[in-house]
Each structure stands twice: as structure tokens, then as C-alpha cells.
Amino acid sequence: MVVEGVGAVIEYLEQLVAERRWAEAVKLGEQLLNDSGNSPEATLRIQSALVIAKGMMRDYPGSLFLGEAAVSLAQRLGDWDKFGEICLNVGATSWHMGELGKSEHFLLQFVAHQPMIANHSRWEAAIWYNLGKVYTSRGEGEQAARAFDRAVSEAVRHGDLRYAHGVRQALIEAFLKIGDLRRVPRLLAQSGAYLRSNPEAESARTSRLFFLRLRVEYCLSTGRLQRALAVSLRGLAESEGEHRHLHDFHMLLARGFYKMGSCAEALGHCLSARACAVACNRHDLESMAMDCAFEILRLHPETAQAVERLFQLEPT
Image (tube, rainbow, N blue to C red; front, side):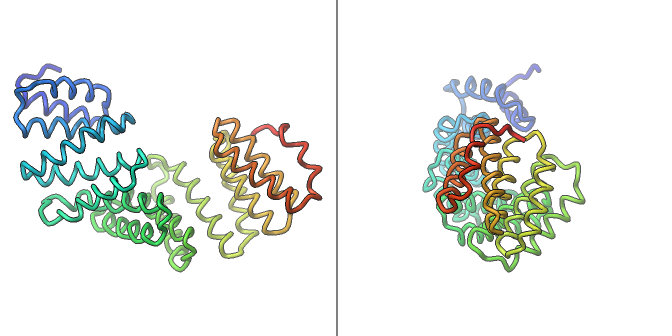
């Protein structure tokens, strides 16, 4: 595509970002930044586009470096819409880097300046969702639940039902972690209704498997063990060929059988989970499965004869 003039080139850069052509956007944006003749307003637009593109390419340090500069520039220019947008993106990037304090700071900067951000409603659900992720990472379950709850409300208020569904699942998970089960049945019903109404939605299969995991977690939390096993087995069948998801459902089955006192079955599912983790090269998940298996063996040595299967199981 042939473009003329700096303004037109920046528009093309923004178009590349909108079309998710990240590598092309980074290449063009970096070329534009080297032009010392850019106005501050042009520089801000270039930086803003690069923050998104670099973040989507997982160049988190590069995205954060440009983002912090862009936030300061937007504040100096009084461009509060750009300020809000960049605070959101820098907050998300900081979370990916594990810099939770910095992530919270930038997200709360959006909240503090909200009255000056004319287009604030466009980003509010995402702001509160990302704050929920920060609090979850810190183990602050109640704050996470409040943030996710606010994010769901904002998404529903603005008619973004797909985003509301995703955040609703995060909210269910937060409630389960803190043991607040009062709203979980209604939230699960809403989540299930959305999935039934949108079977062809992007990432629908992954979302459904996560939904099944949440249902199992709720059943385990409320002592409905037979139901937990039934839903886990359904999840196992629907995860065929995807070892990451198979691992999760084997671990849930292990928990269910262990709660029922069926230690040998629980051990078997731990070992199957380990095999799935090995198949997808996830050493963290392998360690989780092994820890569970050895804890069962420690507490119930009568199941020791099953340990010979430890390095023989194939992923299922």
C-alpha cells in the first residue's frame, strides 16, 4: 500500500494494529519513531500503536518502555483518551512481566483520571478485569472477586456479552478460591446459557472446557462427588487430543476419587495427569501431578503397588 505524508503513514500504522498485523506494525512504527521531526502528537500516536503491537508479540520490556514514555507524554499533552488507553495497555503488559505493583499503579491511574477520559466507558470492563488479575496473582481473593464483579457489570452495561462471559468465568473461579459459593450457581447458569447460545464463538471449545472445570470445582466444594466425577469424565472425553486439558480433568478426577476414599483410582488419575503433562512438555504440571501421587502414597502406603505404573503410562 502506498501512503503519502506522516499523518497518512501513522493512519496506516494504526490500521495495521487494528488488523492485528503485529510484525508489520512494529517494523513501521520503529521506523517512524526514528524521525526526529515528528510532532509530540504524532509521537504519541506512534508510541501508542507500538505499545499494543509489541505487547501482542510478547516483547513486554519494549512495550513497557514505550508505554511509560507515552503515558507521560499523553498527560503533558492533555490527551486523556490516549492516556486512559495506554494506562490499560501498560497495566496489562506489567502484569505479564510479573510487575504487579506497577500494573496496579497504571490501572488505578485510569480510575483516578476517569472523569477526564471522555471515552472511559470503552475500557472500564478491561480495567477492572486486569485489576482482578493483579489481585488474583497476589492471592488477594476478595479484592479480585470485587474487581471481576465490577468488570462483568461494566461489560453487560455496554452490551459486550462475549467479554462479560470471559470475565464471569474469572469471577466464578475467584469465588471458588475464597469459598464464597452463594452466587456461583447463578453465575454458572449464566455462563452455560451463553455457551449454548454462542456455540460457534471464537475460543468456544476452550471456554466450554474451562466452564466444565468450574462446574467440577463447584461440585467438589459442595460435596456433590458423583456429579463431580460425571462432569470430569465428560470434560475428559471433550478434551481428546489436548494434553493440557486432559491433565486438568485427570487431576480433578484424582481429587474426586480421593474424597470418596478410592485412593487407587485417585493415584491412577494422578499418574495419567503426569503422562499428559510430559506429553505437552509442562514440567510444572508434571510436578503438580507427582506431588499429588506421592502424597497419596505417603498417606496410604497400601496403594504402593500402583507406583510401578509411574513411568509406564501413556497419555490418554
